[in-house]
Length: 347
Image (cartoon, rainbow, N blue to C red; front, side, top):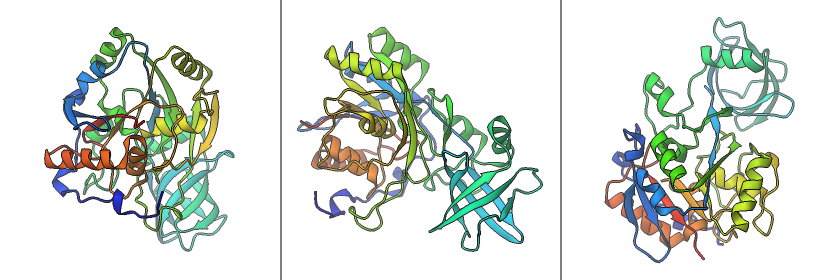
């Protein structure tokens, strides 16, 4: 592909950005997008109508943590957004006012007894830090002191609300570690899951802890853009279900770009998957050959973002530009709390 960003740019009126989810969640629009056909609007609760018995639906079971922290080092105020936990138990974080931070500096969080020690200042606002507690004590600390790191386009002048604590959590949430919610999963309700089960559509989950850099636009060039690493795991049961589905002629349906990215990271050339655990920084853009995923359910993404490039790779750039033009013209709601697409893969 070329390095031209123009095909991945578009104008979005500000009033199309959703600041809260549809209620109930399964009443949001689901735009069925198939290469060569006009976009076809439905609602989320109709999802089972577009899947087949024997298909396998795979969602991300990560749970969002309160990743935004206000710290001090002496008189200096340091804003932290936790990005991901590292193999040695320290945390990679994005920091505001980080320029003067040095290794061994101690960060305080108001009057809370928990502190953090700077391990490394990586430059460009990235640091690694080690907290004075781990495990359940660390979880309790985040509940006391942290706040949800809502995307900046969800405007909350006074910070995230109690309603956001409920809204910004998927029905699949199980393992804590994500900074941002895997937003396609926000649309699912017990009724939708029951309807999928009744139709004979299998369901499994995987884990990809979504990091702070996921939604960043490409600011330089496509070739120079560096993806942030994210930690994920596909267990043996899910890998076996994927391989059995593929062998039986069923389709792999990814709920969200996070699920898709991990599946494609783990896939072999023949589309089979082995159990997988580690970090991925896969960058999927037009020209990529998909191996594991046949159908993708995903929200509407930011212009010039790697996620919009991913959906263009999946269904074709012109197909997606037409779908987004339809969505804008028809008042569909964009981004994390917005509506969704069900994308068929381009041949």
